[in-house]
Amino acid sequence: MNNRIHYTKPSITELEVRYATDAAANGWGEKCYDYIHRFENAFKAHLDVEYAIATSSCTGALHMGMAALGIGAGDEVILADTNWIATAAPIVHLGATPVFVDILSDTWCLDPELVEAAITPRTKAIIAVHIYGNLCDMDRLLEIGERHGIPVIEDAAEAIGSVYKGKRAGSMGKFGAFSFHGTKTITTGEGGIFVTNDAELHERVLTLSNHGRARGQTKQFWPDQIGFKYKMSNIQAAIGCGQMERIEELILRKREIFKYYLSYFSKNGNVKLNFEDGETCIGAWMPSIVFDENLNITREDLKRKFEEENIDGRVFFWPLTSLPFFATTSQNYNSHNIPKRAINLPSYHDITKSDQDRVANAILDLMEKA
Ligand SMILES: *Cc1c(COP(=O)(O)O)cnc(C)c1O
Image (cartoon, rainbow, N blue to C red; front, side, top):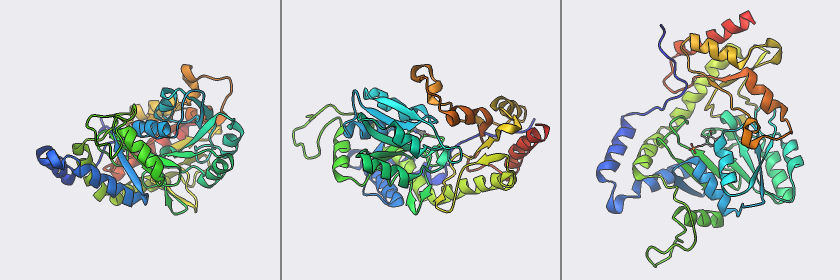
């Protein structure tokens, strides 16, 4: 039997191990924040933003950011139906209501027209999720947000390395959130980061992130409000510092893997891979393939074929409105239809060309028989 082809795994070198070892041995006492601050500074420089707060997860960064915007009971937040649950859960935790709109068939991201149509007097934010590293139409979303006085938040968990008109994903909205979960382009095991250019918002999130203790509060153990505990540890940040020194290489490698898949399929009018045009350059976190309806290739066919070939392919995100607790009567056609004929392709940094060939040939084989 052929070796198993995994769909993601991190790229960890001697550098990350050395930093983590140093943090475990020496990163205590007055050094207990050194790697955290170094990691935050490296990420700020990479993204070209003013402020960053490392967190225990992207979910936590989103939760605190939305809390700091004052989102709460009775409010609505607009996001794409095609999404991981992590973007929606904090909205619910804050007592607000997620409003799911459909995606565009090419970028698989928010349809700006539907976003505008979904705005009500209760709308308090729009979350632009750059799904699979593809980019939302930020100019239009920001314009809509501005016209209605509604902040646009970027969930850039999947968009490390993605660039929209010269700006990095996560740096354009009111705030951005990233994930460093083990499956993402760079990792700290578990982890995330909150980023913004808004000094006041940064200060509010900083206070919230420290159990509600304001910077400058001189009284010890004195919270000024109820906050959160979503911190990244110094040891995790040490691994992150190693990853940040390699970030350009890690993004480049993701793009190489994507382009190699593209070389197999770009001339085939019946399939779509991640979207890129003259104004966008994607970080290609998760190369994915969507088959035209007329091919009659289903998610189940794909999963079966991949299983036969010992390839770990993952299904395209289920629409959140297919979950019983989010079910609505309105149908978002693309969000419900695209996942039925799509699959994520293995894309970890160390994947070999011959393993990519195996993945591509498994797909071509299915297409021949379709
Ligand atoms: C991975 C992911 C998250 C969650 O990240 P965590 O660090 O696991 O909280 C949020 N949003 C999107 C789009 C993701 O892919």
